Length: 417
Image (cartoon, rainbow, N blue to C red; front, side, top):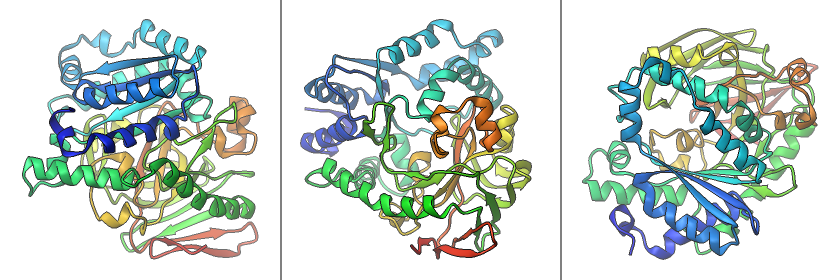
């Protein structure tokens, strides 16, 4: 019998959730290697995913254990030269896993207070060192060369943050219910439900890709007034994606977004964040970003100003956008009217941007383009990729054609096509 927080959910339900991750999330193939990244507090569920993966025919399942308490001690006390260095042996693991054709499942739980004693600057330095050394791995992730899936399980700290007026047990129970509902894992056949969910993305993607709007304009009563220029031959992605071998998978569970890449130099206006951004274990809240010719020229956060500054100053590319996503404010996840304090969930409740690197999959034949060709097409490159929610229930989105014709795409936060 699974213990702890897993007593609040039946073993049958947990197995369905694990099967969703394995059979639909990464769509694990026979004799394929699976890497599971998990904190030790999620050991029970990670082991269940491991068992399900072997049942699905995995050649091997390696669990890459992490421990956020140990990580906190590392950030607090490690020597400066260590903070600025990501070990070669760590990078070599990813290279070998990729060479073996591995799939990756990331199991996360939110605990936004765990690093509150740590300097955001030290976290940002190590994150930068890591992303620099793992640049090739992240490029494969963005281009869908490898299959991966990100999903969540509750923790006491996370549940009581979301449901601060409830007891620990009641909060955990409530968060479990929302996670399973939001991930469409609470039905009789979650895998079939995800196949149907994916079909809902297809017609909208087709319309958007055929329209080839020159720009998108976002406005709402919060003060957002943002004009996002789009590159020629851009592509929208949403729901399931296809890897280089033609195998479908779902990178995010849940997912409600349809996204493409902005033109790096054609974003202008003001964006008002509408949900806290969790970055490096810190909270950025009540913030705005101002863009001119694509670049973030001004920014402010009432909470987490230093963290926001470190994020934007990661490298040159982190001053620009790599993603713009349309998300209905009327989706089942959005209708829970819950602040999750978790980017994976909060970004799937309303429209969002991605600061930093663009995916080559967001432009026709992009995966065959060189880095120089990607830049020439207007796509941004960066070590960073961080999503920011700015949608609202009164969000209006217009598609602007090259001749200036305006087409209403979203009204009152919901799709009009």
